[in-house]
Image 1 (tube, rainbow, N blue to C red):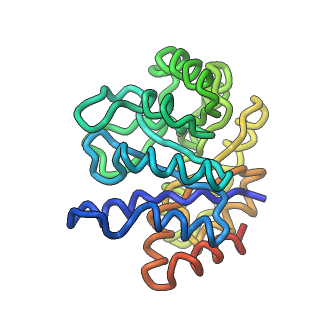
Image 2: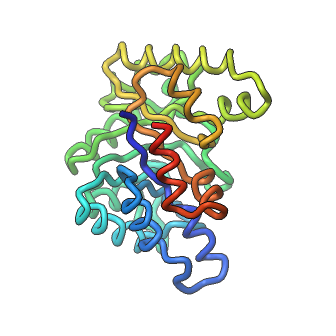
Length: 247
């Protein structure tokens, strides 16, 4: 069964828009886990626009207490600054089950592309090795059309996370056939290289089942924006359970 990791960034966005502690990120994560989610994902950014380093520490303790996976996403090349110690120091402190490396810049609204291995592979190699000394499984964010997906295995990664934004866009437009073929091919190429396959970005209850029927052996989906949006209408418990039924 594909595992569901709930990204709780959007809870923090709402909290930060007003200041204070409401809505409570930790309480929301507990509700997701109580509903059956298999893990929690966060993507702390240097500008602290949503999840803060303090949240990462608290959620690490919660997931350890519950015996579920904690996945920390982020740009390993982003330098530390006030309020953000850097991705690797956060992982060293919290020892997540998985570190997902993403090439996002400060100015990006959201992650929208994967790594260019021709440019980034040798810079990533020592960082992946360091993360493994912390006990982290390492996943790299990649585009389905990247011809060099196998390079992720060569530099030490355990998994890739397929950036599913283009699939979600095609599905919303009414014809995802070509995109599903592209993603199925990407998954097979990754698996042939010995990599596990995760997927995430703009996956929702509307498009998830078709994706998983076509793309083979997806180990984990990380879902935040759509899940939290749907939960505004149906509640976290019902929404998480809806995803679990699809999985």
